[in-house]
Length: 290
Picture (tube, rainbow, N blue to C red):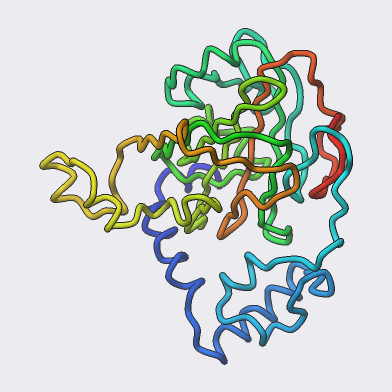
């Protein structure tokens, strides 16, 4: 059914999910949360709030926080930032990244031709998929100073294994947020990839990034086309420069969150930094990567 994704109104469906997940009607949200817990075997004993009734909406439940100590943070210099499944891991060769068997895509495509793409012509990467059952808060994998962030509009294909094996350049064509950090390993890029039904991506320093907030859009110079286009349909790359703001994030601190399941990609510019990961193996926040 991959072909169907080309026909679906991906952004409209995701916008509807954004609204649906925030319904606060008690009966409705409790019924849906209980169904979701049973369907995906969610372990709520790990969460700070263990009862479905304690969440004000499905989105509140989906982005739930965990109890302190549930995810032990390794003393390693780089840790796993999410719970999920390792889709791919390996070297960046001649600025090419492996998506799936017989499917590669370029760093330039992924980073929308950002000048920092040259930092990753060689290096190391990993792609980790977060399924609906996973914990969906994202944590810093290393100590770093935030340099910049790009919001890159795009498609919203599913990012599951079958789609990755079928859609060319999947992660470089989907909507995504790219964060650049200065670290002890050099410049590192951390990419949050959107997908169908991913209604919003957030970071701790910015808050909600997509859908683009109307007030934020109105504060920036816009073209005539932008002014007559609904704010959730804007197709412009949004750049955010943090060079002078001294935003420092420590390993293990919360970084951001997906409001539905998706994928993260880590790019390291240092070829000596090889991740201790195995393809198709489950990982958890805090485990050591080096």
